[in-house]
Amino acid sequence: MVVDQYQQDPYCRDAVRTLAAEFSGRVPRKVVARTVVGARQDLQGQIQPEALAEMLHRLAHHRLDTMITAST
Image 1 (cartoon, rainbow, N blue to C red):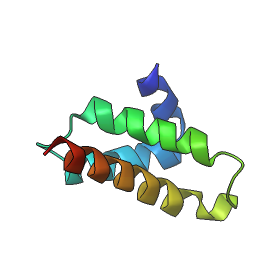
Image 2 (tube, rainbow, N blue to C red; image 1 turned 45 degrees about the horizontal axis):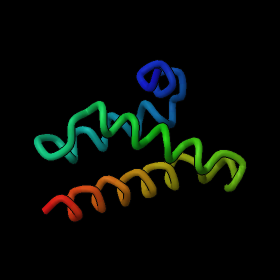
Image 3 (cartoon, rainbow, N blue to C red; image 1 turned 135 degrees about the vertical axis):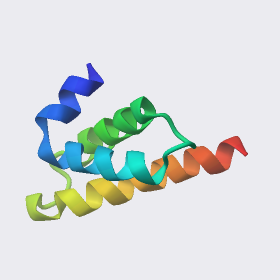
């Protein structure tokens, strides 16, 4: 379950918290969580661990922004 995946990962928890606040009223929190978990899975093993938090936030933000832009 997506909720379990992001709650166990501190990088995902932080990204969901900040992105859910930023996209509040435009994207449901569940969609934010699903997007963050997907981005986390895509980044796994692709970047240096010390860059994970920033890259996770950027990738998930980009995907959410694209989602909003595509629906308008």
